[in-house]
Image (cartoon, rainbow, N blue to C red):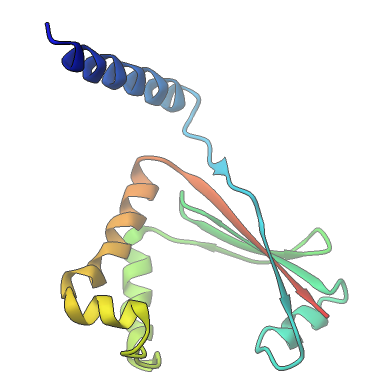
Length: 142
């Protein structure tokens, strides 16, 4: 057998073993480092953060279908979703969203390659069904 083929089979085998262990452990969400964001009084999130009295709000998205907003250890919001309900919500909101700036990188990409508009939903479905991650954003008011 050729050496490069052995490497491919060994790599695939290792991936199957690791994913099998992940499945057997119950597919827990893999936490990623939190992103810290400072907002000033001109930001739309400022009044929301200041209303919590802690000056800090933590938004957590778990790709297994949950979004949680919390402050001072208290849960402010808990939203459950599936890829279908998320797509329905995006369809309802999309007419009210401002158009993409055609000069931005994302605007140029979607104008050049229209199929890229569907890529985020493919990613959402993959993360929902295959591997789960936990993204956190900590919003602090100055």
